[in-house]
Each structure stands twice: as C-alpha cells, then as structure tokens.
Length: 428
Ligand code: HEC
Image 1 (cartoon, rainbow, N blue to C red):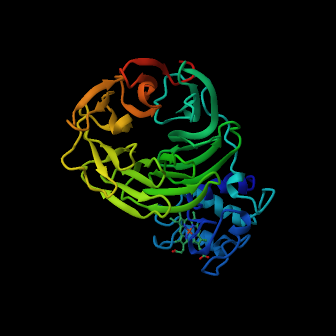
Image 2: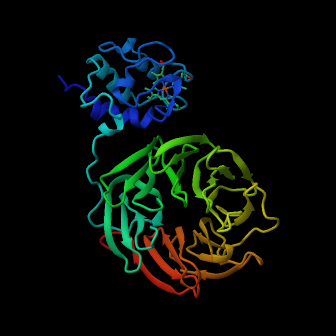
Image 3: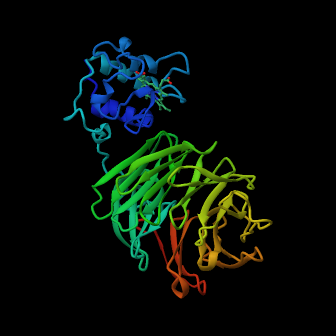
C-alpha cells in the first residue's frame, strides 16, 4: 500500500497556495479559518463540520472542493483544484485527517517544507535584473536573483551576500527605513505569489506576509518605515504595518494586474500602475481612493511620486510618461516623450522634480518638464531598463539603472558620467 498522505508535506502547500488568502485571522471568509490546524477543524458559518476524520464525503471542506456549482466551489472565484490535489485531500481525510506537526496552534505556513537552495552557485548566463533597492546609507544594493536576492557593493560591484530560499522570481524589493528588514515580492508566474519581510542581517529570520495564486509584482515601504504596500497579478493592493507585518487592508483596486506601486515621500499616499490602463492614488492609512488617472490608453508600467509629493509620473507601454496630480487629473498638455519611444518600464525623479525614465530601448532619459523633451540621456543599456533608482542629492546625486541583460550601471546625474558597471549575477 502507498504511504499515508502527510498533512504538513502534502496538504499544507495546497491550502497555503489556494485557500489561505481568504481564510485566516485577518480575513475569515464564511467565518472559516485554516491558518492553524486547530482552526481548520472548527466550523464556520455553515455549521457543517469542515473535516470529519475518515469520511471525506461528509466533510464540508472536501464537498466544497468538488461542488458542481461554481458559486459554491472552493477555491472561490477560481478554477477547481487539480484532480491530484483533490485526491490527496480526500485520501488524507479518509486516512483519519491526522496532524503530523508539533503544535496544532502554530501557523500552517511554518509547516511548509523548507525549500532547499535552488539558486545556482554560478549563473550559466546573466539573470535579468527585475528589481533592485538600495539601503539607507547607499552601501548595499540588492538585486533580484533566481530563488534568491543578491546583495552587492554598488561602488565596486562586489558580491556581499546572497539571501537564499526566496521566490523563484523576485519582482519587487524595498529596504525598510532604519533596517534591518528587507521587503521582497515575487513568485512563480501563474502558480504562486509571495511577499516576505527578511531580516537582512540574519536572513533566516523572515516572515511571509502574503501568499497568493499569482505573482506579487511590486512592493514599496514608506519613507518613515511605518507601512509596506504590495500589488500584483491578483489585481489587489495590500497594506501592512511595520515592523509587525500585520495586514491592515487589502483592496481589489484594479481590473487587471497591478504592475508597479509607489509611495509619497511622507508616506501618506500610495500609487498603483495597472495593466488595466489606469493609475490610482489612495490614502495609505484608509485606502480611500483620491484619484484615478485615465489618460494612458495602454497598460501603465511604472509609477513614482515627485520629491515634492504633489505630482506623480506614470510610464506606459507606448513610450509615454505622463505627469499628474494627486486628484488624478493630468497636468494639462504635458505628455513627456522620453527618447526612443519605447515602453517606459521605470520612472523616478532627480532633484528639482526632474523626471527620469528608463525604457525598453535601453535608454535612460532626463526630461525637461517645461519643454517636455529629453534633456539628456544617461547610461545607455543594451537591453530593456527594468529598474532605476536615484540616490543622494545635489552634486553627488547618483542614478543606478539595471537591465534585462543583467547589467547594473551607476552614473552621476550631474554630468551623466558613468561611475561604474557590473553584471549582477554570481559567476559573471
Ligand atoms: C477568494 C476567496 C476564497 C478562497 C481563495 C477560498 N475560499 Fe473558502 N470561502 C470563501 C467565502 C466567501 C466563503 C463563504 C461561503 C460562500 O460565499 O460561498 C467560503 C467558505 C468556505 C468554507 C465553509 C465555511 C463554513 O463553515 O461556512 C470552507 C470549508 C472553505 N471555504 C474552504 C476553502 C478551501 C479548502 C479553500 C482552498 C481550496 C478555499 N476555501 C478558498 C472564500 C474563499
């Protein structure tokens, strides 16, 4: 006979991926939670026992997995689970629904099998940089790796450390002000999404804030270090308090993927860019939507607040960047046209509210907000510029740009001189 099904090894991964987002302490749909084993056994609104050991067909949880009616079936608003997952759950219940963990009050996610390190020691080819972040003093630059986050000395391009067991693709990174926490967003496309808080000084100390069914595409923390906001392929934006990582709200803010998130310099506002062709601004504390910007006629790929906190810039798939106000109204007749006319994948600002864009053609353009034309170009990359960040002020202001071919460049914004470059992949 085949070995009995293991709850922690085989069932928890399914529940964590497919069910947890709607059934946990902060959000218990149908008054039902399955964030601990103890909770999993308790009945919700229906008063039907979710699990009757030995009897799958009498267990509400199982019955809801195989319900014919889409409206009743779990996971709600999604395809039914794959047959093999349903069969495993059925077998586990029929075998007595045994708990093989230590503590039935412990978070189920703590039972998830530890992934073994899946990152290559040396990369066979450079990995695209899809996200990066700089710590407060500018001495540590983190970039996205495969199942890991890579930390570099941005001046020398020397690898400092590798944070392993991270999402397959890392799509958002943000240091929490004051340290030691780093926010990491990502996932495996079409399969799972994750948002983590990792102690940069002690990477085994980490907390999974969210688990979704598709990738988390962006994360940002407020400049005052109080909030964390993430957005992703479930069209939702989630807001957490720091350093606890407690979810305070969760909103389906868009009709399509949220591709980028940004926060105002004072942390009071959050902005989102979406494939639904709109961008939005909302209040961080209350999730109240203050403005919806609808002037882009194609997906909005990137977004940033101006240092003055009063205007934003959003970049689109058509090669346009547009400035607008917190009320969602465009600043009249000011479409900016970065050099190259290709998708604007990253936006930011230099001193003096001067817009900066990174595009699919590899160009990084400094834009004159008055004439709306490119004033100068910095760091021409050979591949799409996925991420850019601005560090410091005045004469010493630096721009760090990263591209799909794995290259990171550091330039001076004063004279556009290149100060350094390296390939952000171990072994290169
Ligand atoms: C998108 C949100 C969502 C997801 C994902 C989800 N559920 Fe639900 N679930 C609900 C809602 C809402 C209800 C309340 C009943 C209803 O509206 O059908 C519910 C009710 C239930 C109930 C009945 C509780 C009771 O006693 O009334 C069980 C059991 C349940 N879900 C299990 C699961 C399992 C197992 C999964 C994963 C395979 C899952 N759910 C995924 C939203 C969700």
